[in-house]
Length: 117
Image 1 (cartoon, helix red, strand yellow):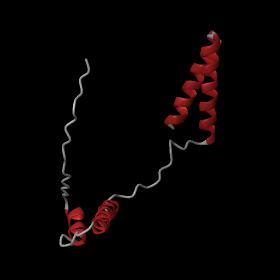
Image 2 (cartoon, rainbow, N blue to C red):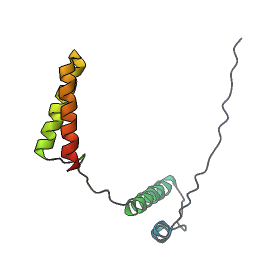
Image 3 (cartoon, rainbow, N blue to C red):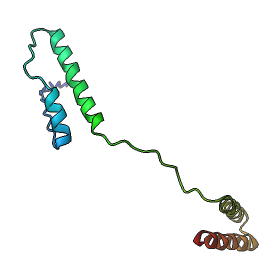
Image 4 (spheres, one colour):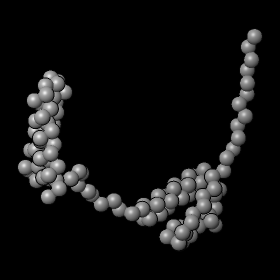
């Protein structure tokens, strides 16, 4: 037994609500509601203009993101100590030698003292 269903098509209308003085004023100046839409070409042109106006208004009201440096910039001796500690941790994880654990703990303490100063 075969059953077929028809999908009901519902039309939705997009309603744009803008709040805030920064968005309202430039938008209201640019929108012209008294435009004749007699054919498809005029409609396409006005839709394109409307989308450009929305984009320009959004771009104009979006704050600029300033570049940031990633991570912390530590001195060379601190970075070397971090690299040495990572290597000691890797060595301890691989072998599980108590002497390697002692070296790792000493390096961790040195790093903590260095970072506190």
